[in-house]
Length: 89
Image (tube, rainbow, N blue to C red):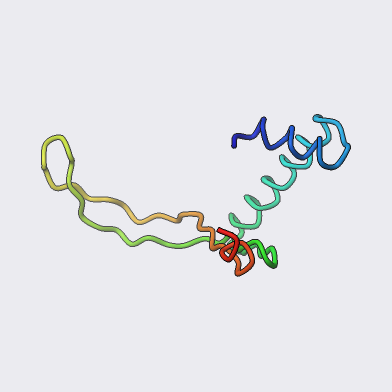
């Protein structure tokens, strides 16, 4: 499912317009992004938790040449499914 399909589903299920559904999704994405940038986490009970994880610098290999390369440390967004969501999969 892509964003447009999600907007259609939300609009159909809730009776709001597609514009309103799109605004709601955009607001959710913005709120999660802002919280993660600030070092926090977002927990939706029963659904899951969005958090930030730090990856250490490491050595890797270029798959085309086999040459060893250095991969810099960085922060990545993580999602851990909640118990209810995991149980339904």
